[in-house]
Length: 119
Image 1 (spheres, rainbow, N blue to C red):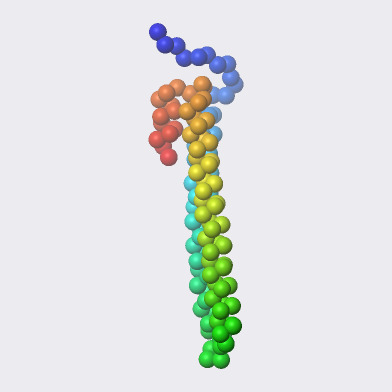
Image 2: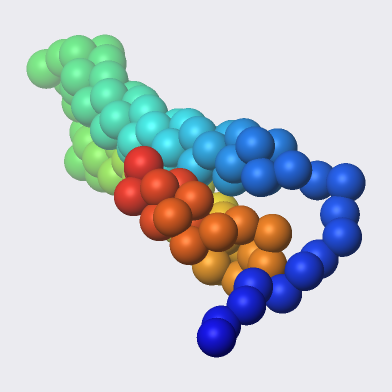
């Protein structure tokens, strides 16, 4: 006969479920924020290229062309990398919530499965 461990706590399964659903919502928000940052970085890089080349006109020198190209690439690359890092942190939030759900003695197996499959 298998018995569940009895843990006395003032925290109910509904409260824990709401907390874990909130953690998953935070992970989705952070992932979306990283996507927005990547998109904005690419748009800024393209705008730097267009604006820089438009301001050069026919009189542009090789140094100015190289500077504009370098600034656009650097902006796009740094912004894109920042977006990737922000999105990667969403995986840490989700992994923490998964671990907390799976190791919680306060939740029944069906509740655990429902929380893990809802995301």
